[in-house]
Image (cartoon, rainbow, N blue to C red; front, side, top):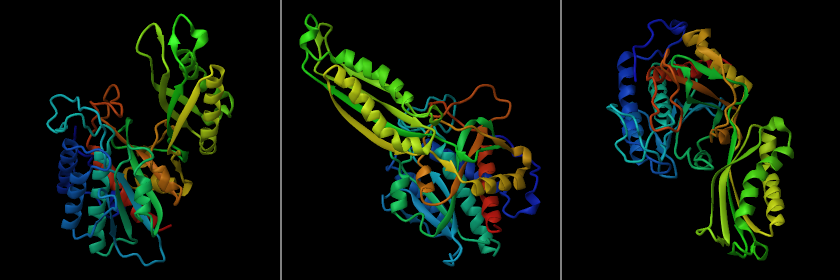
Length: 406
């Protein structure tokens, strides 16, 4: 979906770097091409090549990351004194089918779709990079900026960790990002100081014990009942053993055991997620979850094997960088273009960057103003109002220019 851009952007005359109409059209076309060719985490070779080619065309020197996909690109020469501002995008897609109908740019790859807006994030950072590169050539970019195009955000614990190991944060002092939000109108962003996403871990549990005939459950380890009790009681136990304000919750997505109605099985499996709103509680979560599972399993003489897979901590927005995004958006589009946003229970590996440098993530509005209903993330029919691309580019360019003044 696209629509005409707004003619009047408050503050646009005060800052260089407005988006030319020809570049707007090019970026929409670029986004649609990426949308048509989604690639899963660590397989984003075509996407990486397309980004690299466009940056090189602009006279820049991008470097592919050590993992083979994703890249970084510096604009301006760092003086070693003033740290760079980094703009981060994630470039991978999801393993779900694109269910949009009558859409000329729907996915051409079976069971693959850009259903989380990463194609938009990628295009926004690319567009900002092209605008900032032109300002640098004109001598109007007051500080160096780094573009980070990160692979594998959707794969726990996230491609951010590998990107950091590749050196993407070397020389970086602050980092900013956006995430598409289908609850916010295009032309606006949502901001929040402090935690804006949840921690998200994955949990896999196997229960084992001697099975037998359902006529003699007393001679067996009743694994079906044990698994059911783990599923129902572990979330309650964990919730009662930590401050409720932390939002720590265990939610199961799969439970499997047995093959016949009159046979008590020897093996059962459960898998799900652990989400948490609070960083300190997230650090306690593995011990709490392990203890609760073992406690229930022991009641039924079941042996438990627990695979607790660390995912990502919450994204905790730095106050100063959040204010930078607020001021940048206000300078471009006026005070009415910024709204408060709530903390989400979704996970985002942008949080790993914030373990090293201060930064902030904004919610980028992608809902067509006046549209009824919400196209939710991670759904096959997800799409955006492409005016959001222009808004994101202007937000990032304004932030780069304002950051140099602080």
